[in-house]
Image 1: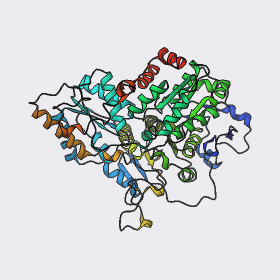
Image 2: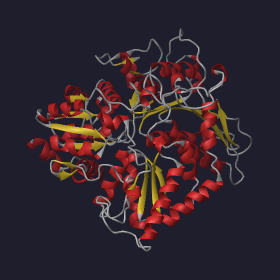
Image 3: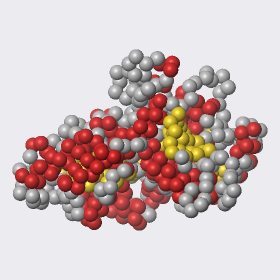
Length: 574
């Protein structure tokens, strides 16, 4: 059943799979459990075998041409198995050299340096980080990186932070430490060059500021800006329009709460076009559902309120992430055709085609659309469910779960570590489980390239990268983030050694100067690693000060479950 008939683009429809003759009245059998923390649609389910026999799970075009199976990585109690050479390259990094781990730990300890790393870091680096014995190493999504840095300083006593990510992440960590009262603790990047981000940069182009000026001229406007943008963008946005940041985990609740508290509000969401259009599709779909279903998403909304807010939801049309851009129609069609029995996960930033596939799967409880943390939680929950359903004794039949990973391939490291821990626990104390968990990489053919001299028909011995395109396809999509690749283990160890050397030159005493104003304690060899725009001014105020306002607005919403009175007053006054 195609729900609902609407004016949205075909690629952005959400399809609820069911028998072809199912009447619309049968929609009462369907319900969303779309809590604020995740987009996960569920449906009263029949056994998978029945769904498969009736072709009830995922629809596809029978005429689609055959395609090479996607690479995958299988996790079991016996270890890991790579299926395809792309997966082999990922697997190689999940078994780090013990000598590299020891070298990194020693360097971090000498420098008394904490490390915050994003989930999208290359598996090569993540493998070492996850194996570290140094207690001040955290891998997380971008929002949690700042919280982790503050905790390392406050509770762990680290004297500097290495931020393994892109530039806007280092800026955000810097702002979080400043607001927590630790402006003297330096935050370092791993490269002196700019470590950009295609999505963040789309919010710094003239088109974005022109779009924001339209918002500025519209009464009762609120700019909801994705957390994955620079501090300067957040500051300049706040200067023009009342602004609140969001994550892919809380964006639905943020927008619906704002509409509920401010009648007649216009929300301007940016810069991620895919996420914005996916949100519009979600709200259009929900607006056709019964009020009791809508209330599960937000208790103060109904069909009527959702239909009323849709014309006042503005989405920026020129922003995307080069990684998520690769999940287009060809990849989506192959997932439908060849992976009908797999669980399908997708990040909110993926194009509408992949978003629709994940929602089709989610309609039968076999998928999730959300943030990186939501995806990891979903995989863990389904693995636990499978383990708990196994017979307590005897030799249960071998089971296999498959998950299509609709996000950056770097997510494989935390997934493998978490699933391995579950399987090891299930096989301890005399218990036994033959459960296998397969993670499928829906990598577009254009986003990988054979090594020189290799027969393309014989396999793809490396990874992501169209020939000569540094990890990206000619169409603009990447299997892994080329900007994240600017972070490496060698760069981290080298940075830690430089910090140690600077401290020893200082007589062994750490500087208590502000990292935003480099002093002789931060020699030229370290100044280049500090956040690039740490001293930027917006409207005569430090960008770190004004840019923190949207982040703090989000914190208020998280803590109080409502838009703050200060932000509401700002919306009404401008």
